[in-house]
Image 1 (cartoon, rainbow, N blue to C red):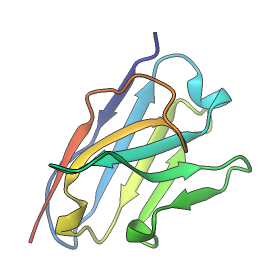
Image 2: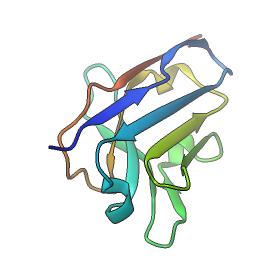
Image 3: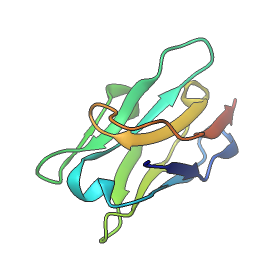
Image 4: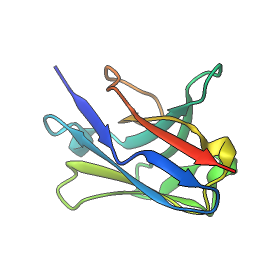
Length: 115
């Protein structure tokens, strides 16, 4: 069974930065594109960013220019660099395959941005 473990969240002031990491058991990101999702309180989980077929990247409009998704050379760790954070970025962040999640969700990592 695939396990996804996210880390790197925390409390940060608006305008600050965080880097999230995701480690997956097995080699799922060698055969599936990686993605980051988030779920804010009272809202549905949404796709934030993913790596496309041609190793390019795609972002939802709200985070374009501020977030960067990347993976290590072995495709075992996926990162989400988040800059110029805003209070509306507050959510639990999860990794999975993108643009559609195929695996069970991990516990996520909480990101809280204070104004």
